[in-house]
Length: 567
Image (cartoon, rainbow, N blue to C red; front, side, top):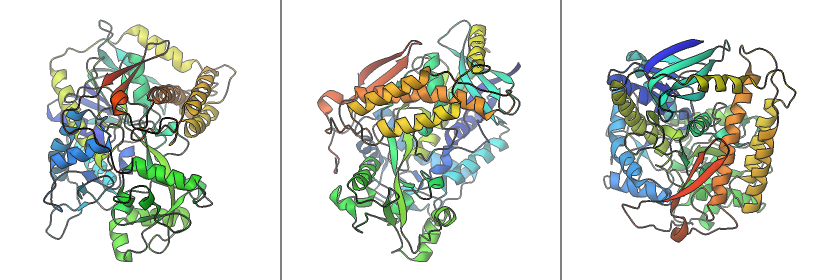
């Protein structure tokens, strides 16, 4: 077995992981970044519309305080407000960091960074690069990481976090597989940063890449860390619906930010019936539910969507502002969006929940020297993420996690991973070989169908209990893998589904626990928001034999809870 040492191990090479690696390296740490696919290939590129920062170029009345208010209002006061304040304050410097590294933001007529309106925001503060902002940022960060000499390893599937032999509550590294050769690798690290993204692939229809199978959540649960707010799964209002091969591919909020209209088959701008003030730029949870309701009422298209139309804008403006969408619809659907409507419907997009971490250090409360940043960490977004805050989160908390992990690594000797943990992990990984059972791809497909049907946009107790029953039945099914370990996608699917099943169960259990509707979590049997009983974070942990659920009151430090328009 190959053994690799480093000071700081970063698991995940998207925007958060890359920014964390840069921060740790700038402190002199020996940093290694592990990528499940290729470096820079991450959900970050799906953040097409932009990054929020109260630079106040387009609207001088904007401020970080206004950005904070929008963030906690959109999060329906489930946010960790300390994290929300850190986000909105620090992102301004982080945007300047990106410029310093080489990101080329669009400019206004005065030469300042251009800013556009986005859903749920009181000011136009979303900085952008056309509709390819995430791609520009990740390429910039990877380039800076290379300049700093940061090591990358691609095509590595990390399957477990390893505890220290002397202290099971301290991280000692990770265990992984070289997907090309099938060889095992033991990573020994003084500190570990999880930047593994979300778990959109547990849903049938999603904007997420294939690797978004909840690995970070599951590995953290197995080593003793806790998760919060896992019931809060965001469905982006607009994903492609046709052709079937393109179903779920993201249609950026920038289309609506640049003036696109949502229309039902009666050609009515239906958002006036749900949130007449904010219309198409209503919060994402409200917009997704409105589209769902229109489709359920029979006012959707034959393909199960509604129309998104921006053809009333000048063709030159459309091509300049959202060039990727022009190409995407022409390529996949043979639709010219400068002249025709797009068909769209909600798609699973983002997990607001994740690891419970310290607001500043981003360190797990339960496992020492384990840090988390980006979508795998919970707290900052509350019950619903503000569009444009995802890229902001990767940069702010990636930088903080990298700084904390880099500083901590200076004070620690190299740990010793527990040998019995490695033995147990190898046994778990090799269990599917040579047995009779179901093929993992079948189970993977079933997970998506179950979660979409029973834990989707609209939930109730009956649906959730049925979904939980079916997920637990899948977890008991023996899984069979054939062939060798060398580049065996079937084997890696068998590993992925164990993570997906853990995450799916955590989502459903948390959703059953929250008996109200708040943000992205909508219970038709409890349709009202209940601040008196449910202004709490739902905490879930796994003790090896099952899940434990707890609730902690949300600390409100600024602003009283308000009712959002449209709720």
